[in-house]
Every structure is written in structure tokens, then in C-alpha cells.
Image (cartoon, rainbow, N blue to C red; front, side):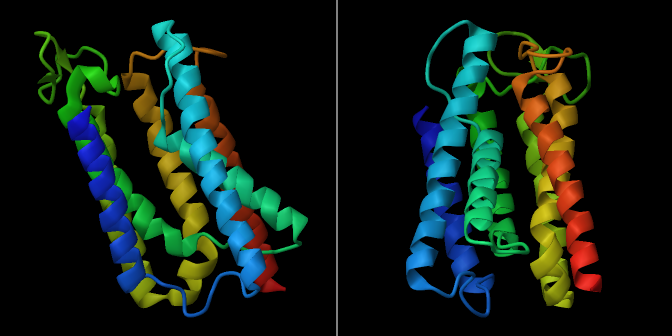
Length: 231
């Protein structure tokens, strides 16, 4: 687990450093300083609670063990929910998350490599397979290295987000966060079929349920943003 922690820490440091250096918004997302502190408080609390809550729920269902877990999908879900609640309370319209997207993508790319290197202990490996990409995590069985699949998908999205940032800053600002949610939730939904997690509802595990909610959310927000910008 020390290796996983090292990769998580690296992911956080690198993503924050790159974000501060290259992807800062031209002006603060929230102009009022007190409101800005409240915004980041909501974000951090939602991120942490979502990560621990949904990671732990999956452990209970899949491992029959009430040990604390953590999940990047749960963190994204919790952080998104918290910020939408904040925006509703303070009547803020539009996306405020676009400039977080490169950092999130970088963090996932690095973090998932850490998950892969941690092996069976991390419980993020895939199901047994005869696929040529199958990997032996130490128990003699070839499994889907789904951590690397996700890392590769997010590396591609990172390239896309950087390209849009450089070419069309206005599109990036209004649409990129929702496109990130749509892409991440979609690829994660299908990758979950390659994991040994227990089903919770309609043969879907807890993470697939969260993915479907996020996909609906992203599509709704993309449509709403498009309509708002046309007015």
C-alpha cells in the first residue's frame, strides 16, 4: 500500500502543479473571497466523503468486509454533487469545473498506474481472462489490467482537453467539465463489467449506478449549457 500511496501523492502533486502553472482561469472562478472559501470547502468535503463512502460501500458488498475504502469515481460524484448544491444555494449558473479537468485527468492517469503496481491488495484488478493483455498479479491467474485501460483512456482525454484549451478557450470553459464527466463515467461504466465486484441493482455494481447518474447529469448539463449560450 506504500507504493499506492506514493503514486497517489505523486498524482496529487503533479496535477496541482501543472494546473497552477498552465491551466489557471484568467480570473477567480468565484469573485467574492468568502464565497470562494465556501466553494472550495464544499468541493473538498464532497470529494472526501464521496471517495470514502462509495469505496467503503463497494467493499461491504464485494468483500463482505466493513473496511474503509476509497474511490476516485466516488470522489468525483461527491465533489460534483456538493458543488451543484453550492451553486443552487448561491444561484450560480454555468460550469465552474473546466479548469480542474486537466488536473483530474492527470491524477487518474498516474493514480491508476499506482493501482496496477499495487496488485491484488488494491482490489482494482479485472476478472480472469484469456485475453493476450491478461496480467498475472501474483496468484497465477491472468486478469484484465483494467487500471491500465482506464489510465490509457484518460491519457487520451487529457490530450483532447489540452487541445481544446489551446484552440478554443470559450468552449473549454463552458463545456469541458461536463464532457469530462460524460467521458469518464461512460468508459468507467463499461470497464466495470471487467471487474469482480458484486452487483447491487439490476446486475449493476455500485460504481455502474453512479456512472449512469453522472452520464444523465452530464448530458442534461451539456444540453442546458448549449441552450443558455444560444440565448
